[in-house]
Structure formats: structure tokens, C-alpha cells
Amino acid sequence: MEAPPAADRFRRNALLLWGAQFISASGDALFLPCLAWLAGRTSEGESGVGFAVFLAFLPYLLLGPLAGAWVDRGDRRRIMIASDLLRAALLLTLPLLAGWWGGVDYALITAVGFLLATFSTPFLPARDALLPVLVGSRSLPRWNAVMQTSGQLAMVVGLALGGLLMSGLGGAGATETERVVRALQIDGATFVLSAALLALIVLPPGARMGAPRGHLLADAREGLTYAAKHPMVGGLLILTALNNLAIMGPAIVGAAVLVQDTFGLEPAHYAWFEAAMALGMVTGSVVLVARGRHLSMRKLLLWGMVLDGLTSLPFLWLPTYSGCLVMIALHGLFIPMIVVGRTTLVQRLVPPERHGKVFALVGITVIGMTALSAALSGWIAELTSPRVLFGLAGVFGAGSGVAGFVLWRFREEPAAEA
Picture 1 (tube, rainbow, N blue to C red):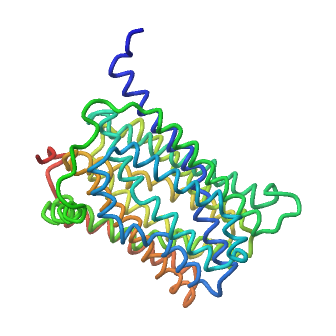
Picture 2: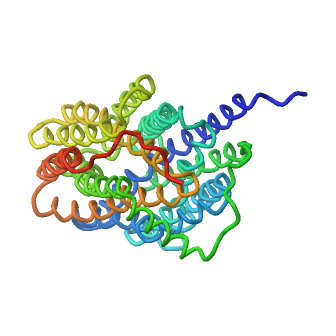
Picture 3: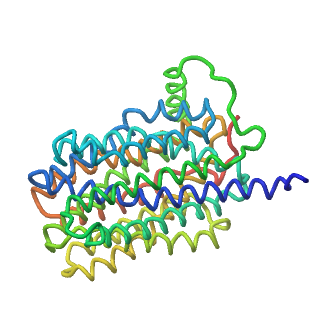
């Protein structure tokens, strides 16, 4: 039997990667809402929610450079599989852990969040470093948009399912906590399915990195040095850090407190609130799939930051939950502009042998700054209100995009360095 043409084989591999992400992200969409909700129920005050979310992102700050160096030294597909299986084992055994621990309390919730993030740290750098090998440079904007579309569509599916599970389908007679824990177990099952799809990918020649050189710590330091000396990558990382510090904490902690305390609603309403944002992100990603190849990635990224910030401001005054649902969906339209623009720029600016390390640094600026933002947001919401928190996010989020237009300039889409 003849082997399939190279283009067909690469397309099949990319579709397997797409499917693995869709299944995994559908379950993963449940995790942060479940974590934030359980933290709110088992702690006193909004700062407890912020601290739990902070711990759930802290490993990206602590381990990001090492994870990136590992990705660039090994088989990226196998690294993703290992990450999936470890996360599955943690969430599927959560009821056993709760029984051994003595119940689902704040300490257990924060520990699970920290461990899950530790196992997750290498997954996204490995995915973003593997994609250029599977689809080629010219198709990167479109495939990055496709990945975003699948990820956000998965959020809609996962959060809608989570809302149903947490509102009553999680089991007849089950308590609120039991329903949330069962939703987390479904998240664990999706990691198993994701690992199975990844195992079917056949890597093309040259996809595996060369033999490790030197110590892992030295390799991680080399990645930090490279990013610091590269003016375009360094500027991108700074802008990303500032934007996520402003936006992400309010988006997670502020949303949970707004639904839980301001409107006095149930966990299902929080899941649907996040699903509305994801639906907006799907719509924005679909537009980029059609038009992404023809756009300037720098302008796409910076306009996304400006519009992402401006659409946070109406939460200062919107009086109803339904009005907030509409606005959060509009807000979600502009998030793919940031993610697709940033990811494509890194893939084009950075040579393949450094993709893992640089994407891990992107993970630090995105997820690590989310951790700090969540901790600050819990404190600010406790002192003021979630509405004020959204207003601050709008001003500083849009400001980071304006700063990028003024300060961060380079010739469009330069060739990657050797």
C-alpha cells in the first residue's frame, strides 16, 4: 500500500493535534470555574478566591523556563502525552484524595490547583512548538486561528456542560460540592482521550530535537538570555506581561465574585457567563481563520489589546446578569486577535530550536502574570467591588495596547534568526 503524500500526512497530524486540543480544552474549561467556586465556598472573602487562582498559576512562573528547555530537548509529542496522563490521574482520583484528606476543603482545592498547573506547564509550549513542523510557515496564521477556534469552541461546549452538571445533572440528590467534583472528574477523562489522539500522530523527519547539550538549567538560562537580547521578542514579552497583569485577574476572580456576590446566583450561572465569553472568542477566531493570512500580526495583536480593554469598561455600570452576558460575549470577540497575533509572531521571529523556550516564557508572561493578577484582584475586589476591578482592567488593558503602538516598532514579519 502506498504511503500517503506528505501534505496529506502532515494535514492528518495537524488534525489529530486539533482534535486532542478540542477534547482536552472542553474538559479543561471546567477547571478554573470549579476551582474559583469551591475556593469561594471554602474560604472567607474574595482574597481566598484570588489566592487559590494565584496558586493554580504559580508553577508557570516557577517552572516555565525549565519546561521550555525540556520541550526543546525532547519529543514534543511524548511530552504532551505525559502531561495529559498526569493531569488525568490527579483529577480522576480526586474523590479518593478527598476521602483520604477528610473532605473537600480549601487546602485540598489549592493543592490540586497547584499540582494540576505543575503537570500542565510543558503542554502549551510543546503544542505551539510542534505546530510549525506539522503545517509549515505560510499556513501558521490560519492554523493558529484554527487552534484558537477549536480551543474557544471547546470552552463553550465544556462550560455549557459544566453549567448543566453543576445545576443538577451532576447527580440526583448530590450536594453542590459533589456536583462540582464530578465535573472535575470529567475534565480528567478528557485528558485521557487527548493523550490517545496525540499517540496517533506520526512525526515527520526533523521534528525531534537533537541530543541534549549541557545541563537543563544552563539550557533554560540560555533561553532567558536569548529573549532578553532579542529586541522584538523582549518587547513582545513585556507587553504581554503588562496586558495580562491588567486583564486576567478581573476576568477570573472579578467574574466569579460578580456572579456569586453581586448578583447572588448559582455556580451554573458563572459557567454560562464564561461560556458566553468563549462564544465570542469562537466568533472572533472564525473571522481570523478566513482573513488572518492577510493581516499584520503586530497590528492585530495591539488592536486586540486596546479593544479587549475597552470592552471591560461597561461592567462598571451594567445592572443585570443578562446585560453582562451580552457584553462578555462582545469582549470575547477581541481576545483571539491577541493570542493569534502573539503566537504567529513568535513562530516567525524565533528559530525552531528555540520555540519551546520562548513559548515557555510567553507562558510565564500570560499565565504567570495571571497568577499575580488574580492575587491582586482578590484583594482589590475585597476593598472595593468587582465592578471597580473591571474598570481598572479596562483602563490598564487598553493602555498596554496604546503603549505598544507608541513604543514597540519593528519591520513587519522579519525572518527568524539562525
